[in-house]
Image (tube, rainbow, N blue to C red; front, side, top):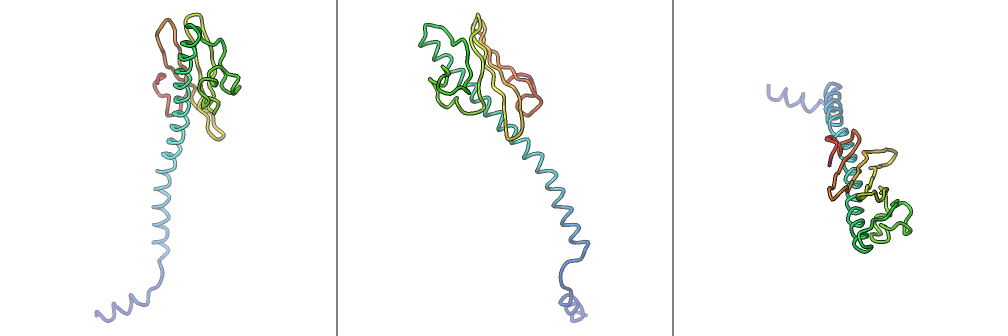
Length: 149
């Protein structure tokens, strides 16, 4: 009996169609779980980049104000490069995602939009009004679920 079983297992080669289909099904299920998770992480990364640039611009605005007797720049667009007052203070702001905004009668407003390859993401805003800083966001991606950040 043992000899017959051993001979049979030695004669079988390869995998059956059912075994191959089962492996393909398992791989497809794992891919269906992993791909959306990966795409969500990329969106979070783009949002984090926009938030970081906005926070850096906020610090540069306060530095500009300190250097100019409490006045903020009337217009900010970091895409303009070294001609922008904030890029003159912090050169890394000339990289995307860009920050726009400027002074208001009681403070300033700065805005940055998260962007990735072929996508537009959430819009983040920092507003200083009468000494109170407000951080708001608009969008449906991972970085803006509550409207604030």
